[in-house]
Amino acid sequence: MYTTTMEQYILDTNLFFNMEPGLNMGKNTKEVLENITKAARIMKNQKKGEIYMPPRIVDEFLGFFDSQSLPTAKTFLEYVNIKSPIITNIQFPASTFYNIIDDIRQRSYRGLTIAEEELVGAVKNKTIPDPNNKKEFEIAVGKHTANLRARYRNATRTGFLDSLADLDVIVLAKELDGFLVSADEGVIEWGRKFGVHEIEAQVFGKKLLAFVREEQVS
Image 1 (tube, rainbow, N blue to C red):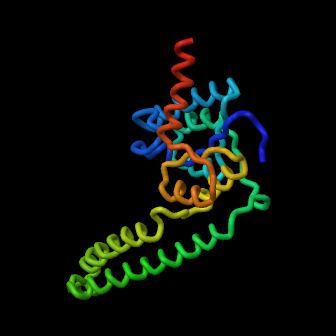
Image 2: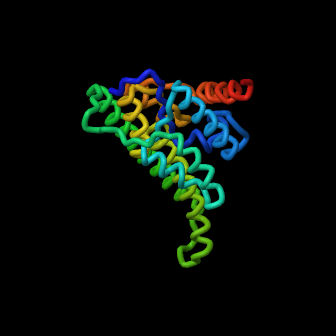
Image 3: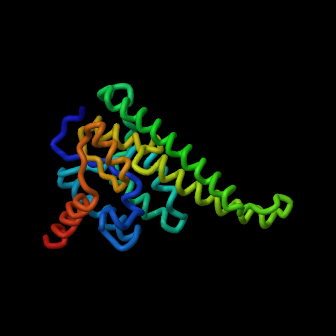
């Protein structure tokens, strides 16, 4: 464990791009980044807190920017501690992994059920034309495929950890004994199961804006 008086915040990618449940620090990603960069600098200089992001999260984060907006993103990263979690030293209760396996099993079953329902619906409604008519066939099948993909994704991925980057933020929060900050329901839910501290995204945003306003007043 790290021994420091400064609070540590481990940030997820979605905070910067999901405006609704995000940090509420601007009308768009550019405004959010500019405000959080100011706040991160002030907070760090005052030794009241630090921001951390695992490398996989940083890669995801940078992937959303084009060459024009990339400098703004990189300026923000100057005030971020980029750190991989030490996965060999962190211990979690066995019950957590039982929950993961059980959740995966249930999601796999729901996914299979959805696939069966879509197949039965396509055959029952007889909406698939002659395969020899390639254009009409692809249009008809495309409708069923899109519906299947949407339902399958919702059943198997919503509320779950669907990437190593998701797991990285949770494990790093555990390692640092810091606060997990995310707008992803799955990351938040599993962060709780893994027993990490958390702070709501909008609450964290208010905390950061307070640093900016404090500097403006002084």
